[in-house]
Image (cartoon, rainbow, N blue to C red; front, side):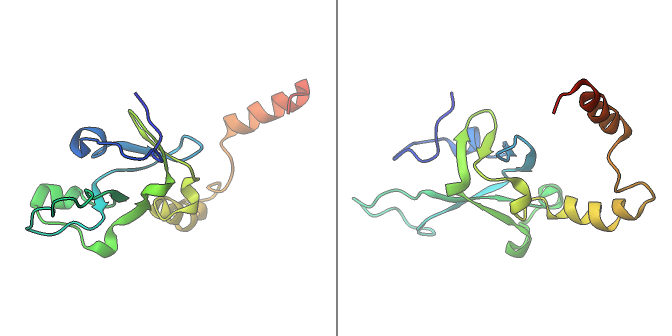
Length: 144
């Protein structure tokens, strides 16, 4: 079951429905995995006051957590990537965003590797041959 993120009050089990879920951008390209959540107004070590509305999710957090999962601890805040909850368009088997991934910092490592390493390899900036062949065949048939 999928639901829109902009609905009023929805209760979700964060561990079951959000954590470790794949995040796709608006084009369906994988951009991250949800490692943690950022919540609004969470009193640390205290019960919620009666009558106060419960905390809401303000952002999805992702980043380099493999080392901390193996050795313990938490990654520094500066290493985590924040994706505002307002960018979430759908929560289902995957979490879908309403924006393109290249407009965020989520894919900066891939862009950096592409531009600074792969792009310097001879032929690294060219499209794959099979993509060029498919495009030229489509042009010859009159497809666009």
